[in-house]
Image (cartoon, rainbow, N blue to C red; front, side, top):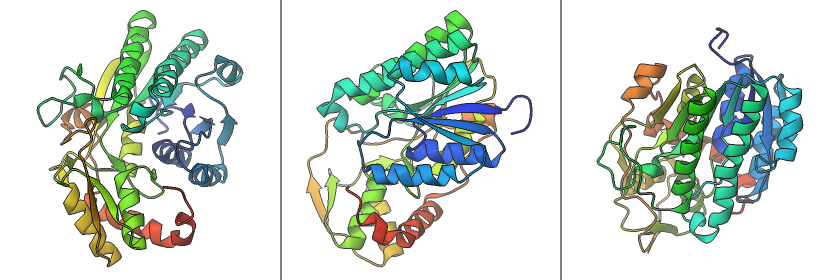
Amino acid sequence: MNSPSHPQRVLVTGVAGFIAARTAALLLEAGVSVVGLDNLNDYYDVRLKQRRLDSLRSQPGFEFVPGDIERQADLDPLFARHPFDTVFNLAARAGVRYSLENPYVYFTTNVLGTLNLLEQMRRHAVRKLVLASTSSLYAGQTMPFHEDLPVNTPLSPYAASKKAAEALAYSYHHLYALDVSVVRYFTVYGPAGRPDMSIFRFIKWIDEGRPLDLYGDGSQRRDFTFVDDIARGTILAARPLGYEVINLGGGRQPVILLEVIRLIEQLLGCQAALLHQPFHPADMAETGADIRKADRLLGWRPEVDLAEGLRQTVHWYRENRDWVRQLAV
């Protein structure tokens, strides 16, 4: 992290979020100065975001700035005050299903927010953008998903907004020579994860004896990726690459959801009660990443397999059980 090709002063947007907080923590551990921006919206329980933020505030080299990438008035003084060499745009409205209920906020955050950051980078000569994107773009494509596939059939406003953000970033690369790495994430999980994601909910509900809402028959397959692996890959993507789209995924055989539930049952010593719901039309039946490009360009491969990642996640849950039970899920 101390070589000239690595960032030394960075902006991490959405810094109180699951992936962004872990990315910021690893950057700080490597001696990088991190300015974190977040609007602390209430898409999920803000107490979890505050807890992540408190942990970051305890580390030297971190500055938190409350603000919103949707507002240039928040970004103007930030970019004028700090000579960033890299922007990690990890702020996003996430979640496939909720994007059907409120599509507008997905486009104001994911598209307009990205445009605002690109404009600030252009004005202030910030050369490097790492943009978080999603495996949801690969809907309808042949597995395993590789980066050269046409991603023109998004199944949700969320996926469509991410496609638009990628396209905007490419146009600024072309017009203004911004160096852009787009990292497409595959089903990220881990300690202090998002409570709207399946693994967080499965652990909490199985432990509490509550039925699990399972959409479809549970045969969906996902390429689960541990958050530390995702954060490492995100940081490695800050090297100069021109414009590249890079998958960050587990890269192994995708795992059936019912198998994930079985592993969690074993770790908790409890049995799950399943409440089957209709398969959601915006969901994908299967995801699987071709990660050869990440290996070639970044020297990145995931290090934590599902069994170990679930063990660490359940361990975190047990250590924080009383507090987690208070969270709205």
